[in-house]
Image (cartoon, rainbow, N blue to C red):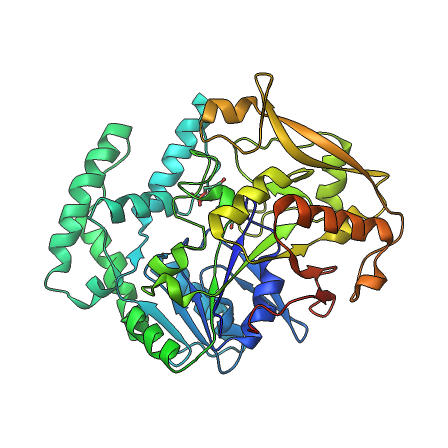
Length: 432
Ligand code: IMP
């Protein structure tokens, strides 16, 4: 039986929430494997709205095990508030239904501050990334720099002061250089020890637990955050997040081998959006972009920022199909395009007069990319709530079929409204 990885195939915000919720109902275990509380989605279950950021979607469903893997960066105070907020809504989150990798990296207040200092300084020099300011990048830097504090360190009060010392040697030098006040050792110790009792009961040797579940034949859903174009290696660097967001990370970020993954579902919006700075070849800084933003309610879940909007970019999604090994896509928000006279799809790029079939890695080349469009006739009818192909206008079917052809992957699911049941199901990723 196939385990499923869900990834975003654009710049995030493709509408993963609804699809992940639908799949988590079919799964036994739901695993986050990268990112942190920079992600965010809203689930509506039996009329109750749940806002999740760091917790895997499995926590809202009874009988599911939610797992935070080693590839995630965890702000322990943000995690405790998220758990408490959901408890206030009547959900019980205990070590029975949530486990956290003991080798996952912690985000501390100094990471959040550094993220903010850098973004503020960069806004004056025009090199701002537009991060969520939650300390994600600085925490990953410390992980790779081998000076991070990890979940298991909270349990070892003897060695923790030495680890904090090492971390502060680095951070205080950095802060002095940036003209910001140093952080006291005692402040970080208090920050950590004040939360350790709330975190430690959830700590687990996650790779081992997942291996046991896999051997028993449990269905595992790996829940990706952000999107392929925000991947630290494959995205629009440096305007990316600091983790690998591609499907391969599901293995490394949870401690399972790549063979544990069977089906890769790429969540794909019927047009394109991004938040933050960076290249966006099909961006429509005009009435089309405004129409998509308003109709699609394109505001960030975490930061409330207005998302930039543009036409569907088949070049980028084709690249994402390759980078992730996408088996099928879940196409979302088709209904947002209802009523447009014509639709454009980007099928290639021109850079300095030369045609190219992919987005080059160079930042300079990315900024000079000009999209080559194909124009399709739009449809006047509403597609909201369609549950069968025959409910869709002929032009909408043509648009979807053309996307499949251009990106080289089939539609497994088509979502036509935020409601769970307003979905055309072609293939259930969990079925063999
Ligand atoms: P960071 O992840 O906070 O470091 O932000 C780096 C970039 O990733 C910025 O452009 C953010 O807007 C973007 N980003 C981070 N998380 C998300 C997400 O969940 N959806 C969309 N964009 C995101």
